[in-house]
Length: 124
Image 1: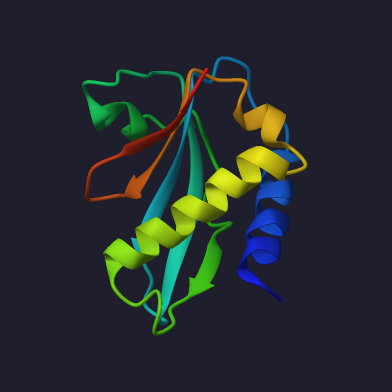
Image 2: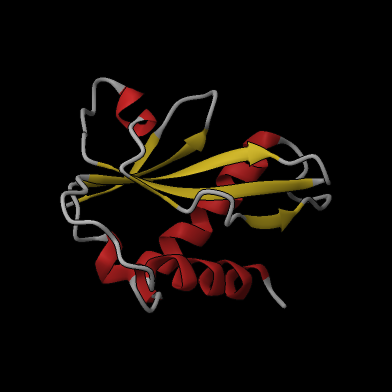
């Protein structure tokens, strides 16, 4: 299965849950997985401040342990490559994903490693 389908299937299952009202921003938290993967978790925050990335620490909604695992390959080995690759998956989902409208129904969508900077991918 290609990574976009894997990512889309995971995100569809997450977004089919009841998403609480009041979410101002979503963030795709990225982790360097223990099993040669990049791990993706979705959080929704009831705060958003473009000048203070701590908004993403307020987990009003979270996929919790429901994580999407993207295998590292030679092309996506280092964290910078993982971030770039997963950013492309998210942007593609925002264009053609089944529940893209749910994600776009907030002020902003970000992505970033939990111990790094957040890149804003979408603003309403």
